Length: 196
Image (cartoon, rainbow, N blue to C red; front, side):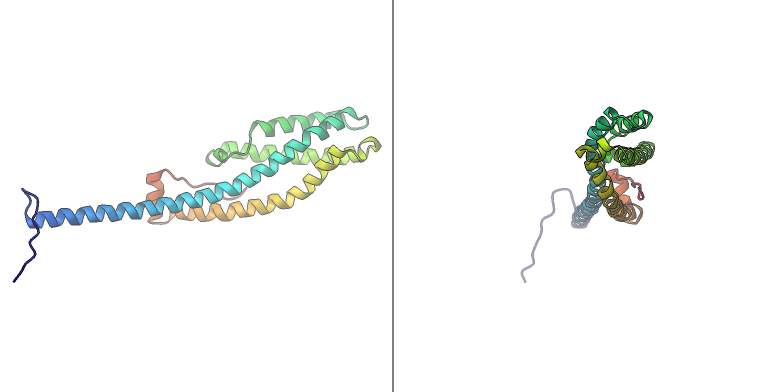
Protein backbone atom coordinates (compact mmCIF):
# COMPACT_ATOMS: atom_id res chain seq x y z
CA UNK A 1 0.00 0.00 0.00
CA UNK A 2 1.17 3.40 -0.88
CA UNK A 3 0.55 5.90 1.86
CA UNK A 4 1.01 9.50 1.24
CA UNK A 5 3.47 10.74 3.73
CA UNK A 6 3.44 14.44 4.50
CA UNK A 7 6.49 15.60 6.21
CA UNK A 8 5.97 18.03 9.01
CA UNK A 9 8.55 20.72 9.62
CA UNK A 10 11.36 19.73 11.96
CA UNK A 11 10.38 20.10 15.60
CA UNK A 12 6.61 19.80 14.98
CA UNK A 13 4.64 16.65 15.41
CA UNK A 14 1.97 15.78 12.90
CA UNK A 15 -0.79 16.88 15.32
CA UNK A 16 0.82 20.22 16.02
CA UNK A 17 1.45 20.78 12.33
CA UNK A 18 -2.22 20.04 11.55
CA UNK A 19 -3.35 22.40 14.32
CA UNK A 20 -1.05 25.14 13.02
CA UNK A 21 -2.30 24.64 9.46
CA UNK A 22 -5.92 24.75 10.66
CA UNK A 23 -5.20 27.89 12.71
CA UNK A 24 -3.63 29.63 9.71
CA UNK A 25 -6.58 28.66 7.52
CA UNK A 26 -9.00 30.06 10.12
CA UNK A 27 -7.03 33.31 10.38
CA UNK A 28 -6.98 33.65 6.58
CA UNK A 29 -10.73 33.00 6.42
CA UNK A 30 -11.49 35.47 9.21
CA UNK A 31 -9.31 38.09 7.52
CA UNK A 32 -11.11 37.64 4.21
CA UNK A 33 -14.49 37.73 5.94
CA UNK A 34 -13.54 40.86 7.92
CA UNK A 35 -12.25 42.53 4.78
CA UNK A 36 -15.59 41.90 3.07
CA UNK A 37 -17.44 43.46 6.00
CA UNK A 38 -15.19 46.53 5.92
CA UNK A 39 -15.71 46.84 2.15
CA UNK A 40 -19.48 46.64 2.63
CA UNK A 41 -19.32 49.33 5.33
CA UNK A 42 -17.15 51.51 3.09
CA UNK A 43 -19.58 51.18 0.20
CA UNK A 44 -22.52 52.11 2.43
CA UNK A 45 -20.64 55.12 3.86
CA UNK A 46 -19.64 56.22 0.35
CA UNK A 47 -23.28 56.10 -0.77
CA UNK A 48 -24.43 58.25 2.15
CA UNK A 49 -21.55 60.68 1.58
CA UNK A 50 -22.44 60.98 -2.13
CA UNK A 51 -26.03 61.82 -1.20
CA UNK A 52 -24.75 64.40 1.30
CA UNK A 53 -22.49 65.89 -1.41
CA UNK A 54 -25.56 66.38 -3.60
CA UNK A 55 -27.14 68.47 -0.84
CA UNK A 56 -23.93 70.52 -0.56
CA UNK A 57 -23.90 71.17 -4.32
CA UNK A 58 -27.46 72.48 -4.27
CA UNK A 59 -26.59 74.90 -1.48
CA UNK A 60 -23.38 75.93 -3.25
CA UNK A 61 -25.38 76.81 -6.37
CA UNK A 62 -27.73 78.89 -4.22
CA UNK A 63 -24.77 80.75 -2.71
CA UNK A 64 -23.32 81.41 -6.16
CA UNK A 65 -26.58 82.96 -7.39
CA UNK A 66 -27.26 84.91 -4.19
CA UNK A 67 -24.33 87.33 -4.44
CA UNK A 68 -25.34 89.03 -7.75
CA UNK A 69 -28.96 89.29 -6.56
CA UNK A 70 -27.78 90.84 -3.30
CA UNK A 71 -25.67 93.34 -5.23
CA UNK A 72 -28.59 94.29 -7.45
CA UNK A 73 -30.94 94.66 -4.47
CA UNK A 74 -28.33 96.65 -2.56
CA UNK A 75 -28.04 99.21 -5.37
CA UNK A 76 -31.79 99.57 -5.87
CA UNK A 77 -33.90 102.05 -3.99
CA UNK A 78 -36.96 100.72 -2.26
CA UNK A 79 -35.42 97.48 -0.94
CA UNK A 80 -34.95 97.57 2.81
CA UNK A 81 -31.18 97.96 3.40
CA UNK A 82 -31.49 96.04 6.68
CA UNK A 83 -32.91 93.06 4.76
CA UNK A 84 -30.04 93.22 2.27
CA UNK A 85 -27.46 93.38 5.10
CA UNK A 86 -29.15 90.55 7.00
CA UNK A 87 -29.06 88.40 3.84
CA UNK A 88 -25.40 89.30 3.26
CA UNK A 89 -24.55 88.31 6.83
CA UNK A 90 -26.48 85.03 6.50
CA UNK A 91 -24.70 84.30 3.21
CA UNK A 92 -21.31 84.94 4.85
CA UNK A 93 -22.17 82.62 7.77
CA UNK A 94 -23.43 79.91 5.42
CA UNK A 95 -20.38 80.21 3.17
CA UNK A 96 -18.04 80.03 6.17
CA UNK A 97 -19.33 76.52 6.93
CA UNK A 98 -19.43 74.65 3.61
CA UNK A 99 -21.33 71.38 3.40
CA UNK A 100 -18.42 68.97 3.16
CA UNK A 101 -18.69 65.37 4.35
CA UNK A 102 -16.69 66.18 7.49
CA UNK A 103 -19.81 67.83 8.90
CA UNK A 104 -21.41 64.40 9.23
CA UNK A 105 -18.89 63.57 11.95
CA UNK A 106 -19.41 66.80 13.91
CA UNK A 107 -22.95 67.18 15.31
CA UNK A 108 -22.46 70.77 16.46
CA UNK A 109 -21.06 71.87 13.09
CA UNK A 110 -23.89 70.06 11.31
CA UNK A 111 -26.47 71.84 13.49
CA UNK A 112 -24.79 75.18 12.72
CA UNK A 113 -24.78 74.32 9.00
CA UNK A 114 -28.51 73.52 9.04
CA UNK A 115 -29.29 76.65 11.05
CA UNK A 116 -27.23 78.87 8.71
CA UNK A 117 -28.77 77.39 5.58
CA UNK A 118 -32.30 77.75 6.99
CA UNK A 119 -31.69 81.37 7.94
CA UNK A 120 -30.20 82.13 4.53
CA UNK A 121 -33.04 80.44 2.65
CA UNK A 122 -35.68 82.42 4.54
CA UNK A 123 -33.88 85.72 4.01
CA UNK A 124 -33.31 85.04 0.30
CA UNK A 125 -37.01 84.33 -0.23
CA UNK A 126 -37.85 87.60 1.55
CA UNK A 127 -35.23 89.46 -0.49
CA UNK A 128 -36.55 88.12 -3.81
CA UNK A 129 -40.10 89.04 -2.83
CA UNK A 130 -39.02 92.57 -1.86
CA UNK A 131 -36.93 92.95 -5.04
CA UNK A 132 -39.78 91.83 -7.28
CA UNK A 133 -41.95 94.62 -5.85
CA UNK A 134 -39.49 97.16 -7.25
CA UNK A 135 -40.00 98.00 -10.95
CA UNK A 136 -36.23 98.36 -11.47
CA UNK A 137 -35.60 94.83 -10.15
CA UNK A 138 -38.70 92.99 -11.34
CA UNK A 139 -36.95 91.79 -14.51
CA UNK A 140 -33.39 91.74 -13.17
CA UNK A 141 -31.65 88.58 -14.38
CA UNK A 142 -29.81 88.00 -11.09
CA UNK A 143 -32.97 88.33 -9.01
CA UNK A 144 -34.95 86.12 -11.40
CA UNK A 145 -32.15 83.53 -11.48
CA UNK A 146 -32.07 83.36 -7.68
CA UNK A 147 -35.87 83.15 -7.54
CA UNK A 148 -35.89 80.26 -10.02
CA UNK A 149 -33.12 78.48 -8.13
CA UNK A 150 -34.92 78.86 -4.80
CA UNK A 151 -38.16 77.45 -6.22
CA UNK A 152 -36.46 74.58 -8.04
CA UNK A 153 -33.98 73.70 -5.31
CA UNK A 154 -36.47 73.14 -2.49
CA UNK A 155 -37.97 69.95 -4.06
CA UNK A 156 -34.47 68.84 -5.10
CA UNK A 157 -33.23 69.36 -1.54
CA UNK A 158 -36.18 67.38 -0.16
CA UNK A 159 -35.39 64.50 -2.54
CA UNK A 160 -31.67 64.64 -1.77
CA UNK A 161 -32.34 64.68 1.99
CA UNK A 162 -34.66 61.68 1.65
CA UNK A 163 -32.05 59.82 -0.40
CA UNK A 164 -29.36 60.69 2.14
CA UNK A 165 -31.59 59.49 4.99
CA UNK A 166 -32.17 56.14 3.26
CA UNK A 167 -28.44 55.60 2.68
CA UNK A 168 -27.56 56.80 6.19
CA UNK A 169 -30.18 54.48 7.73
CA UNK A 170 -28.71 51.53 5.82
CA UNK A 171 -25.15 52.44 6.81
CA UNK A 172 -26.10 52.96 10.47
CA UNK A 173 -27.92 49.63 10.53
CA UNK A 174 -24.69 47.97 9.39
CA UNK A 175 -22.63 49.73 12.07
CA UNK A 176 -25.04 48.49 14.77
CA UNK A 177 -25.70 44.92 13.63
CA UNK A 178 -23.46 41.95 14.22
CA UNK A 179 -21.02 41.01 12.76
CA UNK A 180 -20.66 44.32 10.89
CA UNK A 181 -20.56 46.24 14.19
CA UNK A 182 -17.29 44.52 15.08
CA UNK A 183 -15.74 45.40 11.72
CA UNK A 184 -17.10 48.97 12.00
CA UNK A 185 -15.55 49.44 15.41
CA UNK A 186 -12.19 48.00 14.34
CA UNK A 187 -12.11 50.04 11.12
CA UNK A 188 -13.23 53.28 12.78
CA UNK A 189 -16.66 53.57 11.13
CA UNK A 190 -19.07 55.55 13.32
CA UNK A 191 -22.75 56.14 12.76
CA UNK A 192 -23.86 59.28 10.90
CA UNK A 193 -26.90 61.53 11.42
CA UNK A 194 -29.90 60.21 9.56
CA UNK A 195 -32.26 63.15 9.24
CA UNK A 196 -31.29 66.52 7.88
